Length: 468
Image (cartoon, rainbow, N blue to C red; front, side):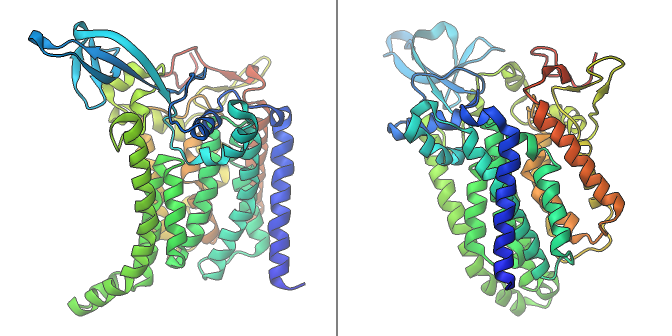
């Protein structure tokens, strides 16, 4: 069998294995919409030529903008403004930032509901919305994309090997594919649909496309398309950009060539400019489309809607903002320290609403801290992990409610690549850690939102990190 045929067969088998495993774990969920099908509802709105969700859909995490009449002062004409009423102050904040005392407000003219999450996953739901309208299925498209992650991961890993950056065999790379697909929080995220998890699953698939295209800056246009689409799926994934830029810099000769003098610097920049332009063009085009969409909904090109979320954390957001140092301690604890609670009676183990630490759900990731060798791409991968991970640590949400730290999916592909290029042998210990991760995440995929006895949180007490 020719290598190309063998490779295609491997990719197909991986996809089918993903369909089988994710489909089996989804079970009865496959045949009905999830409880949070925001992207299907938005797709139906698009098909009807609007961005507003009308009539509103029940559930959490909808952005709501109220339209009110403001009474004019000293005989001035009344005016119409849009915005929201703050809970921490007796004012109405308009979409342009003006603070209007509630005493000046006239009657409410209605509330518009929107999806605040980046819109790219909506494209996946257009077929479901065409068939079933707002009641279209969001679980099946999520499972299909999750199944595609397995061959995409294998292809990305083999690209690292082809570039001489990884010395892994195809068999070893299959272990890393299993780590990503079955031994990480991707598993519980892939089998239930819902707006938050669908975005994560698509984000992982796009990250794999991006990393593969970014290796040696080989495919700048594809890298730009994948990056732009990833940013319109999960906003933090916009910070994946450093990997391509550092790879392009490396291919151009890096700091050594840049230090050779003015002539070499000019020549180097001229050589890199075409690839940089091909990379930037789709990113800019998609960013302009996103800003136009934001302007149409929220009267501000950089406002994607989270400032208008109708959520239990509204007072917290008004006090500290969407991003703040105030959230750092909690988010570090969630990402790095949370353990399951062991009990002396049934159900014997319970998991808090903030989930489990990253190294608990995927213990083999600890090996990335001690690579045997550092390849040329190592620095780019590590800097990019930091670029994506750090903003989420200052974000007002930890991912709650979750089985494990789901925000790690924004950069988990990079961590898998680090494991591949790090050169540590796949010893019995390493394979055991991978299998332990698979077992842990299998437990999560089976029990999360199905067996509440294994989970605990205290109502709306979002700040709860440990048991009381």
